[in-house]
Image 1: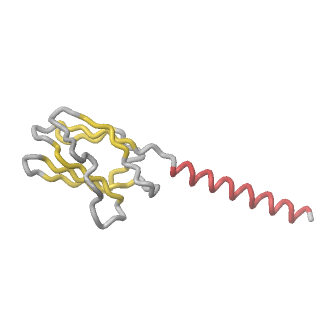
Image 2: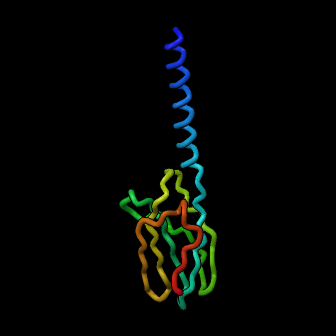
Image 3: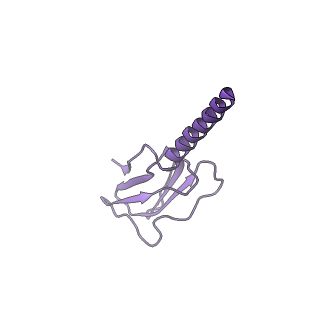
Length: 113
């Protein structure tokens, strides 16, 4: 009986510990400050989970980032993922893709110098 209770308590503890770890991973801050240090207007910005085969919607929408401007963007898509591909489209036609950006660790992402 004592062994059974100890096994039950150990199982409950492990379940709580693992669920806490999962909750901690889900609760990571995914806000990234996107900075445009180029000479061109950043007109579109996309961030898609690395597992996605398509680009998500343009995060900037009708907004743009002029040279020297920044925007704090919440990259969290609800998947719990930390790795996203970024795609920036500039008004001059330049397109830049950066793969597997860790948004759980990256606080500032800068285009240009």
